[in-house]
Length: 313
Length: 276
Image (cartoon, rainbow over all chains, first blue to last red; front, top):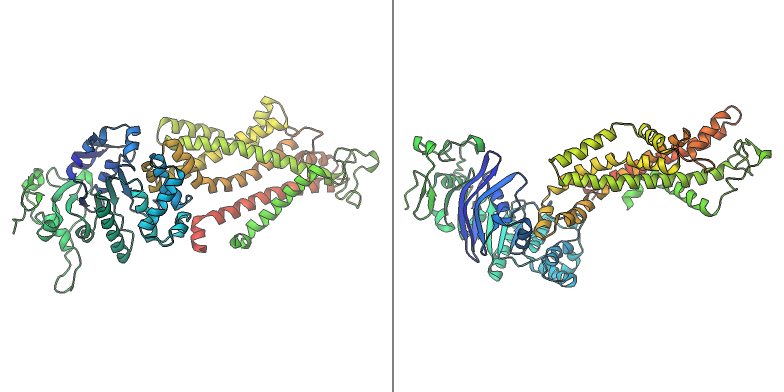
């Protein structure tokens, strides 16, 4: 349904994302995992044609028979928000503080020509009820500051699915919330996916979130793909040393039996990446080949872009 | 609302401003005496039961002139701030939209140039070119309010335009004009209102200064600034003549400044969060 091929995003000389390819089928959830600065949010914005000024995307993003990167602003307007919805990361800044929740949900529905004002208002009420906000009729006329963080994120989900998009892009929608609220919202997103059959591009730094929601996972580092595959297989037996390191750094169970192993080093500056693998320098297996030659995709239980992938068990 | 009543500078500012507005409104239908009627037999009188605030050198009732003068001052403030607000907001939004381009730089440097001259000095310049008169003075003051509002609008709009809800509005299919008018402007309106209140005080003071210099309101229309300059000649014989219009100007400027300060505190989201 969406086919991204060889997507690169540049800011001047800096290549924020390089040669990224992935596909999404209807109803499928792809988890895009990476640390801050891995290019995952920019990938999401590129899919929506909302890159900040100065950033250029190349490659192709094919969606419903169109290349989104070659559409004019006017043509894009018909797609984004309508066929592709987005849930933003920060519930505090993603809702307009001077508009009621109902008006914000209705705006897209009206402007995309799906209903008149009365119809949009009715739809907004249904959506507010669907995402589980208490007392929907009152919430319709509430302002964002009257809602808690979790409630705002629910309202944002209602906003994102208001036009019944075929694809939902979610950029860390649960990262600003506490764990119990997080779990509720992930369950809600899964329900909505099951009901509507929409595909979801789910961006997160949290492998635990990925394991709960994503059918497939794509791990990013330094703007490049590291490893991709079915979530279950990838988390059970990571083949890329980076994925391995991410998993080892997750706290679990008894701290004495399973001591936390943080990854050494820090995410390098994008302009100081080696010509080869971006993970070179932090990788325990890195050698001269890794430094100088970009690794090819190595197929297996998952696809790993690595010269020295772990053998499949 | 309760918080507004507990905020001292807002409360004092609001009450004083309301008083001045009320006096100006009352003067439309009633004044203690006809402010234009001269009375040679009652010149330079001190305050009394008959003339509440005394009379001037032509025997005109000072209290009545002050009330009509308030009308004059408020009209000047309203029109001058209106000109500054509308043009400044438009230019500021245009510059913010064109952030980082030559258009942005051109607008802002032009406004910097205008802003570099003190408001009264530049008003004198314009009035000298156009000829003295109330309309000319108001236009001059208004034009020199433009950079104040434009800078504020540009900065605030840039900040707002970086928020995710502006992205969300683009997702909702809103075009640039709708985003500016429906999503950006309401979010910077509070700031603009506060600034308008402060500029209102500046405009009243500027008009009083111009009229004092004989470049603003022309006789016989009463103006606080001109009353003050007329009073100068008779300072030794009748000091009340200078005190009352001087006090009126000072009070009006104080009132609108306090109102602006109070509004700024009350509208500041950080303080609001703390209060909530």
